[in-house]
Amino acid sequence: MKKGKVEENILPWGGQMVTVQKKSIKNIYLKVLPPEGRILLSVPQGYSRQEIKDVLDSRRDWLLSRQEAIRANAARPAKRTYVTGEKILVWGKTYELVVREVPGKTARVVCQGDKLLLSMPGYATQEQRRQVLHDWYRYQLEKAVVREKAQLESLVGKTAAEWRFRDMRTRWGTCNVQARRIWLSIHLAKQPPEAFRYVAIHELTHLWEANHGPAFKARMDRYYPAWRSVRKQMNARADFE
Ligand SMILES: [Zn+2]
Image (tube, rainbow, N blue to C red; front, top):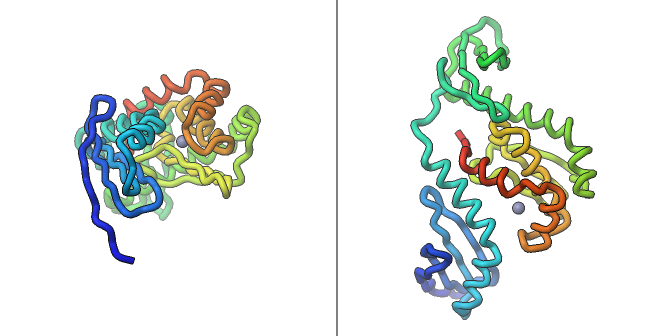
């Protein structure tokens, strides 16, 4: 099949400019691009201005929330290097990192007062220290899911077949509705516990409603009335390093 040409336009929407590409495609693709959170919408050729506006309006909450998260992340200061004295977030609390070299082969992470002790065997690179901490964040989340999933699932009235974790930097969670598999970003373990609950409930609610339309929001209001303010706070302090 011949590749169709792309027609690109910049359209105003809700006080911002959106890049709209018309292509020979069957589906709609909507993206929010880092670092400034520009919206890119690809639609099939023949889409009218009104249809484009309807697509954007129907995804408004998702778009604004993604932009908030992306901008908060882009605005962060210098990168962490995982050395003693750095500030590390765990479940919404700030700890001072203390890195120690220890004999043996096993790395360990322990919270002690307001310190987070990272014991590394022998010489460890920045990447290895980051990896150990990320593994530990993953373990924190696994424990939180084990502890809370029965309660969260009974609240929503849906059960996930599987909860999994990965180093996602542009979103807090995703839900594969067909497989009933929920993915959570390991960076959620830096947020306060209510942020973890909000994201878990949000992803479980996708097992009722695939998109973020009014029915989805009505359910969120029922299961977790404070979700809007929790989302706003978590995006304002997003940390995906
Ligand atoms: Zn969602």
